[in-house]
Amino acid sequence: MKGCDGSVLLDGSAAGPSEKSAIPNLTLRKQAFKIVDDLRRRVHKECGRIVSCSDIVALSARDSVFLTGGPDYAVPLGRRDGLNFATEADTFANLVGPSANTTTVLVRFAAKKLDTVDSVALSGGHTIGISHCPAFTDRLYPTQDPTMDKTFANKLKVVCPAADTNSTTDLDIRSPNKFDNKYFVDLMNRQGLFTSDQDLYTDKRTRGIVTDFAVDQELFFEKFAIAMVKMGQVDLLTGTQGEIRANCSVRNSDNYMLLKEVVELEVEEMGLSMF
Ligand code: HEM
Image (cartoon, rainbow, N blue to C red):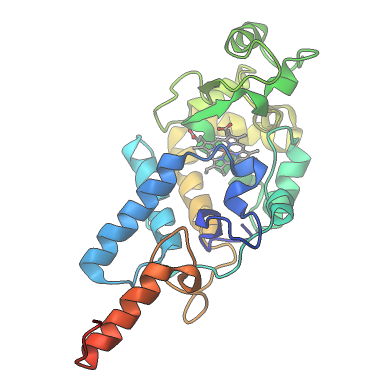
């Protein structure tokens, strides 16, 4: 949560809830966690336990961007997985909510050493994917946000007829499954889904960057790649810090299967039988 240490992958423990079960992360897709551990299993089968879950997440993000039409970029590797659970309070303190304005977005990103251009470029990650209604219905009910295009708002009201429905809609109405610069065209047409998106076009500090990205996809791709590499280096564990998890959702010290494997190996090395 505080950095790229794979803490969001950890299941909760008897000691308490984890970052994964904190409210803002409940919409993270279960399938994504399965895919990360499936990749981990395949990599470890080929190479042994030398690639961390946090590196696998960074590489998966890179490949998802490229495979949906975005830029290809090199990802520095060598991250280690964290041993600490992030608390729910850590999660709220470090994440930006969808109702945040540009000032909050810039302050929170700056705390991670990401500048204004990085913040706008990374928000462009909303060029793909979906959102559940509760993340934006505050812009529809009880009063409609005047910065939202009226036709767009009416369409959203059909998808989310009440303030609390759990339906979903696309983040980028122009090209929801393609990694391109249309998200910035959406913002210029007042069709950004979240306040945190739309306010980037309202705020004078970021408006010019939104326009630049809307008219120049190559520029957006270049700045996005730079910002992803920077974000992927926030508060890293390297060298002998942390560990390489044998299951991305469990710390090795809590992993009974790993313990059994290690004991079996030691017994085998000693030429003994377990039975
Ligand atoms: C200002 C910072 C950000 C805020 C407030 C924010 C907020 C959100 C919210 C509320 C959702 C919808 C979750 C749901 O209801 O299912 C979402 C989805 C998404 N966000 Fe962000 N986000 C931010 C930054 C980022 C960044 C930096 C990236 C990547 C570079 C990103 C990529 C995505 C993607 C790909 C989805 C779609 C997930 C899916 O389809 O399941 N977001 N974001």
